[in-house]
Length: 259
Image (cartoon, rainbow, N blue to C red; front, side, top):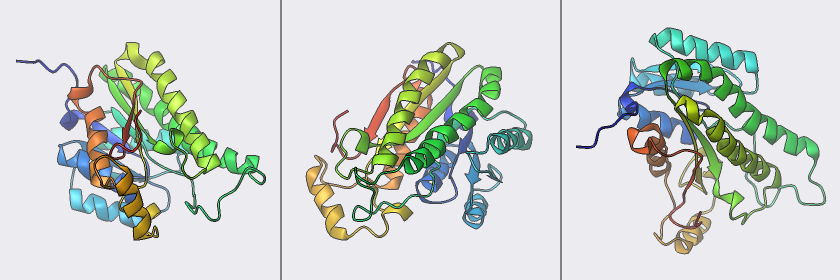
């Protein structure tokens, strides 16, 4: 019999940023289905977050905070620990700054501004850094922790050159790898799950069916990844099965990108 030395998913308190809707909500539901206590973070989607918590029950805790606000993030993590009587031991950095995935209206090389890049870097990388640092004391006290950053396959395959968004996600991948080296001695694993266009979330709701069909035809599995399938991959990094895995980027897109 193989002995699992890592914390099972059911023992984690999992904080999902941007967890009130879209992909974040699917990750919350997947973690809760495995018995985890879930902290549903939101910035503006309070009603959706509370409705999701009502569906889950006592294992869910809702708290609003802008992840770019360092003090608000620390208060959020502290409130979650107080609510459940045990620290947050897993975080999923899913929150995104406001962004329009519109290939026809994106900034191009000639007009891309530093302000656009800075907004994405602050929200994606700065937000993740705030959450990680706020959760570290509790993870160290518990003797282990899991950090899962949400990335994009556009880093490897920028079929639509969203310069600012992709640059921020590439920086988050670098932070994933460097953090894994720094935090490994504390028993804290840091990984990334990267997807492409998902069928369907709020971000892809306006995507024409022909685009989904073209993506499906390009993948070995002949399908477009669903949010539920993506959330399953996140569960792997929250589970004992990944206890020897850190610093990795798992691309979940039906095989479109080989990582």
